[in-house]
Length: 302
Image 1: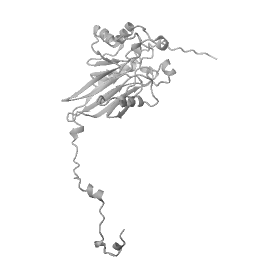
Image 2: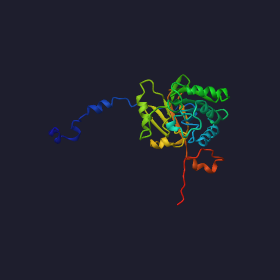
Image 3: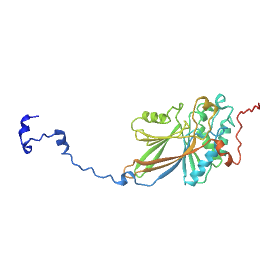
Image 4: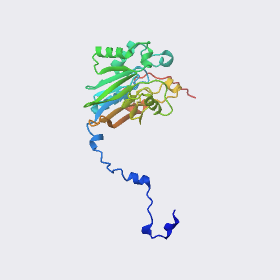
C-alpha cells in the first residue's frame, strides 16, 4: 500500500478497482422468470408396472398379484407393463422341486388360466433370457405364450419383446422412450447399483427417459444421467435357490404417474407409487383358500 495515502484526507485516497468485479458489473442482470408451463403443463399419464411373476411355482404370489390388479382397476389404470419372467421356467437342478408344470405347454396354459384379467386392462409383457428361456435354446416363449393366450380369448395379454422393449411416449410433436428391461446377472449390495451401471453403459443418444428394470426382485427409484430408473419388485416369495445365493425377494407393483411437457418434450414430473406386500402368512386371515404345496417341514416332540 502507498504509505503517502495515510496522510491524505479520506476523500482524496485513490480507489482500487477489482478488475473481476468491474467486468462482472457489465453483465446485464436479466435473470427472468421461468414460466410454470415449461415444467408443469399437460395432463398426468398413469401406467401400471409389474415384474417377475414367476407363475407355475409354489413360491408364486397370485394373492398379491391379483390384489395389485384390483388396485389398478380401482385406480383406472388401463395399460400395464410387465418387465419379464412371467413364468418360472424349468431347470431340474434349480427349480425342479418347485414348479407345477415342467413343459412350455403346461406353463403357458397355467399362465393363461391364472394371470389376472380385468376389464379394460391390457398387460404388455417382455421375456427374459433366464427362466422362461430355460425350456429350449432359441425357443421364443414370449411369442408362443402370446399365441396361446389369444387363441383362448386372452386379448389382454400382449407380447412386446425379448429382454427389452422400447415404449414410445408421445406428446404433440415430441417423443420420449420408456425402456422396459429384464437384464441379467446377480443382485448388487446396493439396490440402485445395477440400474446406475446400466444407465452409465448407454451410448450417447440412446438413453431412454425412463428405465424400468425387472429381474432383481427389489424396489428402488433413482435419477442418473437424466434417466428415471425404476427398480421393480416381483411377485414371488424367496426360493431355496434365492436363499442359497443370499438374494432379497420383495413383493410389489407400481403405479407410475408422469407429465411430459408439450412445450419442451421433457419428462418434467414423475412419481412411482410402490405398493409393497408382506409374506403370505401375514394375509392368511384374508385368504379364502391356500392351495400352495407345503414345503418340507418336520416336527419332533421331545
